[in-house]
Image (cartoon, rainbow, N blue to C red; front, side, top):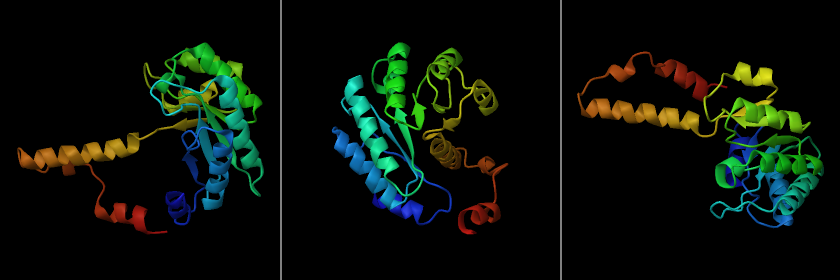
Length: 207
């Protein structure tokens, strides 16, 4: 929550957060996490159905109750709070599309604003999810078997796209490659085509 407060107080854009499983197993934990997150500056957040134990998701009924409690806290805010419910089958549970859809339908019934099943394998998987629910769908780039452009996902009906940690990974990869080139062969080819300090400084420090 301290991290959320720091971010929200230093950014003009609306802030949403990955709140994992609500940092607790009980529905009341999800309710409290959403309430505290909203107080800290969030206007959106996600609750997932992964328990934290390897390969274990909450049973659908229990997971639905957790989402319902999070929705209750979201609706209690004096502003619009977008609650995203995540079915983690393809990440940490059972990579079963039918079960994923059943879970997303349950979370829809519980009142979630956005539905998210990270790791869907194909465009057909995404189509099946879209055809089975009536809430906006978020995808993690995707699909797994071949990343498609944003335009193709949007044309399919996807309403929101997450990129996970890839932007940070790309930045760290560039740093690693630059360091390796400096060590051997000791050249500076990594500077070709990069943004200069003027642009980077403007983006980072000028409001």
